[in-house]
Amino acid sequence: MDVLSLLGIGYPFRAKAGDSRWYTRKVDFVTDIGEKDLAAMKFVAESGQFAIYAAGDDTFWLVQRHAGMPWTGLRLSGDGLFRISGLLSEATRVLYRELASKLSPVAR
Image 1 (cartoon, rainbow, N blue to C red):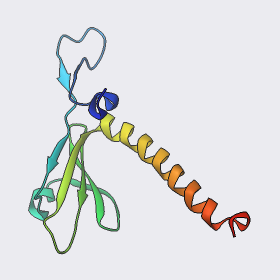
Image 2 (image 1 turned 90 degrees about the vertical axis):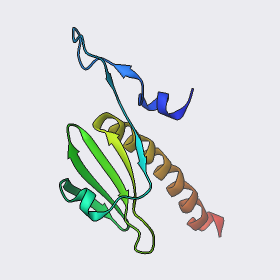
Image 3 (image 1 turned 120 degrees about the vertical axis):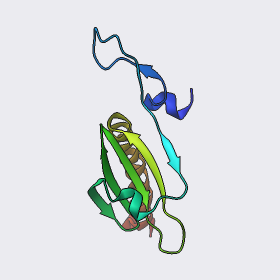
Image 4 (image 1 turned 60 degrees about the horizontal axis):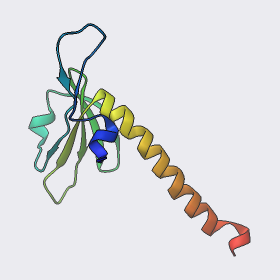
């Protein structure tokens, strides 16, 4: 199973029971996004080079704003953002455990 299917992205789904319409959760990678592209979006948060913008219609952009290179972005559905946040939390815990074990008095 690929990562996108684990996240439920890119595959048809129904928004609610009884809905006759099919939707697709979509992820787009953009290799060159500028400030003018983001101007109409609502700024949500930032940390260092990274920022999140709400584009509306349950769509968000995670943008890497690097001073010396073109900005890059990842477009996610709200559901995709929620699922990825869980994965990032797990990765952060692993990173913290590895760092904490190196700093532990027992490891000295």
